[in-house]
Amino acid sequence: MSDITTVEKEVIGNAIPYEIWMLQQVHCRLISGGIGDTVLNNALIESFCIYARALIDMLSNQQGAKARDYTTEAFDELSESALRTSLKTKLNTQVAHITGKRTSDQSKKINGDDRALLLRVINAKMAQFRDCLKPELQSFWNTRNLPIPLPSFLGQ
Image 1 (cartoon, rainbow, N blue to C red):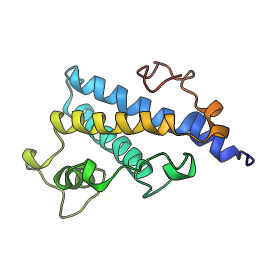
Image 2 (cartoon, rainbow, N blue to C red):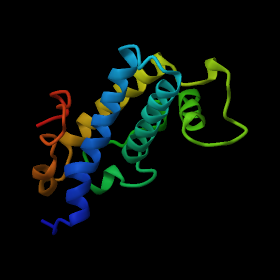
Image 3 (spheres, rainbow, N blue to C red):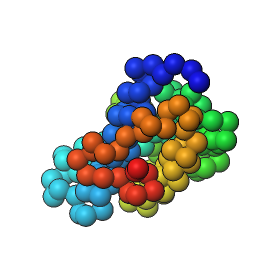
Image 4 (cartoon, rainbow, N blue to C red):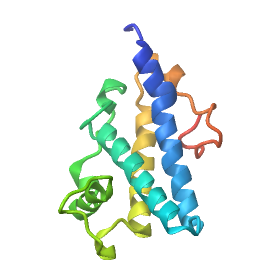
């Protein structure tokens, strides 16, 4: 068994559960009709996209914390085929970037169906992530300190 670092404890015990929780909570607010204020609704949509992309990057071992650093070999990273290319393009252009690729065309923006698909894919992969945590890290997976519990399949 290797020595557990403070960073590993923080990532497993706080950072990842917080990102999941925020993704879930932002999604709940959006499907319940949002806030009734265009600016706040747009901020919720961007927030959802930022949390989704951070978790997708982690689960596919792309940027930031990488799932492979915390899981056994039984974990299958999020594959390129798990999300449609068009959805990944929408996600990446929707998230806080000022580029020529950003659009005002609503059909090219993340919508409710897209968010639901992203949430389903991320939830399924996060359940596998939790189940494949390295044995020495399992006790640090902490969802108890969140203001509102995660769905039972992601909690403790």
